[in-house]
Image 1 (cartoon, rainbow, N blue to C red):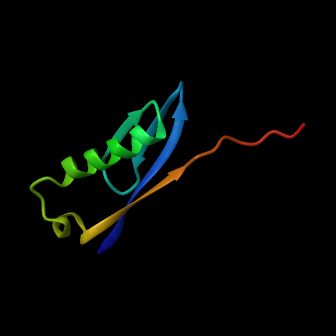
Image 2 (image 1 turned 60 degrees about the vertical axis):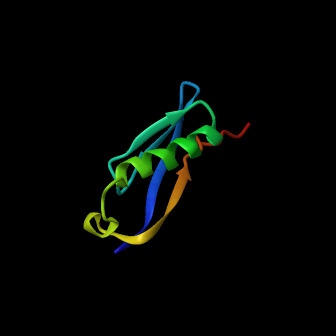
Length: 75
């Protein structure tokens, strides 16, 4: 059983986009704080009326978000 719901976060055109790595969830927001709220809401909707175990997850999975930072440039 998986115990982590993982998201990859990128920034594009002033919006942060969270894409599920091991779930079919995508959400976005103009700020990271709002994105965190949207991720929680999207996960709740995804698992609504579902048994976590039927989707391959433990009974109380955590959410892990990885934020991609663009390549550094050195002067």
